[in-house]
Amino acid sequence: MKDYSVANYFLLQMNPKLVLIINMKNAFNSRGFVFLLVSPNSFFFLGHMTDLINTEKDLVVSLKDYIKAEESKLEQIKKWAEKLDQLTATATKDPEGFLGHPVNAFKLMKRLNTEWGELESLVLKDMSDGFISNMTIQRQFFPNDEDQTGAAKALLRLQDTYNLDTDTLSRGNLPGVKHKSFLTAEDCFELGKIAYTEADYYHTELWMEQALKQLDEGEVSSADKVYILDYLSYAVYQQGDLGKAMALTRRLLELDPEHQRANGNMKYFEYIMAKEKEANKSSTDSEEQQEKETEVKKKDYLPERRKYEMLCRGEGLKMTPRRQKRLFCRYYDGNRNPRYILGPVKQEDEWDKPRIVRFLDIISDEEIETVKELAKPRLSRATVHDPETGKLTTAHYRVSKSAWLSGYESPVVSRINTRIQDLTGLDVSTAEELQVANYGVGGQYEPHFDFARKDEPDAFKELGTGNRIATWLFYMSDVSAGGATVFPEVGASVWPRKGTAVFWYNLFPSGEGDYSTRHAACPVLVGNKWVSNKWLHERGQEFRRPCTLSELE
Image (cartoon, rainbow, N blue to C red; front, side, top):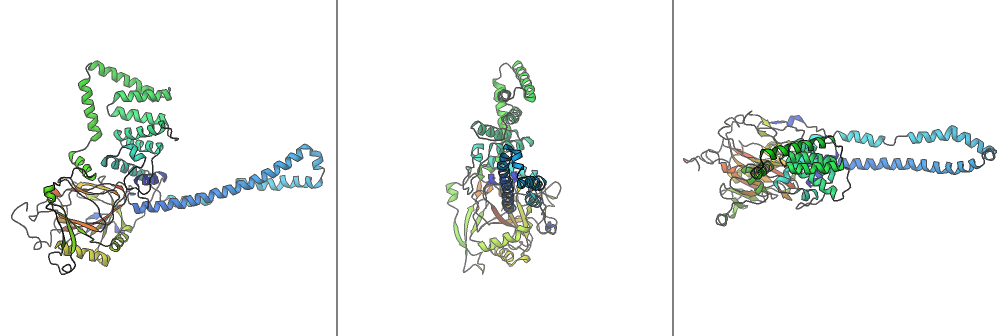
């Protein structure tokens, strides 16, 4: 499977349309509190993109068949032309003598009356019918413009989160890649245009500069420097760098002196520059302020966002050596649970406050494959709860595909639910169904709480099971790069390891929310991330996890 982000972007760029057909009986799950909505921006599920790889392969085979048919047709025409060329060369030297032979006279009549008509039919014969027919059938499964834009945004998201410069990303120099790919100048130009359409002038500048650099280095491309400089100069101007915008516009005018917009922009830039000099002859302070404003525009991140991205890169961890010494690994029997007394499971501490534990070898490869196969047919864009409207909706900060599995659907799911109950000591009968999620290229879930806050009193009212007391999260795949679960409030990063699961409480025993459990799923840089989670609720835990008198205990 091609698991490289740039390759996934190529795939979406090459195919212009997609229609997804889904069985809508899976569109609502009352126990799970999620509408499984089909979003147009739906190609972040690598399972569907794998299907596109096969579709494209089929089209290539069909295209080759068409080429062979055209080559065969041209070969027949070529042979006929060569034969007639030789014949007419002889005939034109002595027309009367040539036609004096009755056979030649007959054959001339035959050729002009019959054979040239056959040749005309051969030339007019359309050899593309098979290819066009196949293309028409497959086109219904192609991505659309919104899918391509989504893939481009995923690359930009990865670039920001993992501090990747445009040259590194363009050349495909990412960690752990199996199928190296690169971006052409035209691809870079396309990314810049998409950023420009979103009024994201920071990324417009980065990718237009990369396109220009690759052209300056001699890359042969259909991308036009004039168009690139036109976008680039405006993006730079929008970020407040008037001097650079003027320099880029001058370069554009050297290539196309008659460029109407560039000439108009240059006059405007010169007017603004003169006005600024007149207003403030001593421009040192204003330049410093302008640089600061530009820097703010480029970053445009809240402190939490910076912490989140650092943790995704493995930076900013707050675990001190002293605290590290208090973390242990052990064999755990679920507090003397009969199923685990003779065969305890391996458990290790990931973090102390909040306490996050990881269970090792807790789900088998066979169980993982069963869960994935059950989930794949019903995977659709994951939704989040909107506290303002009380409805579930897709969101730019959660990019994944999810499905819900009930215990009665499969003995494997039922067995997994029992395992969670045995090892946590919590009643799963009031828990939400097992949610299966797939994060493909750029897939992420930005910082959020699993529990409902006090300003969301009706968040789980329909379920009637109280708040989400705890979270159990299975990692069902390894991830080549990225994809960590991070807790920005406490500086913790938990990395995916196939066959393991992590568990933490979202609420204190008092029922108050533990705000240190705010967490996020980092974007997948390289690979494909599968997880499944179980949200356990308060109802049924009254004697399993009794309340305490202290609010924060």
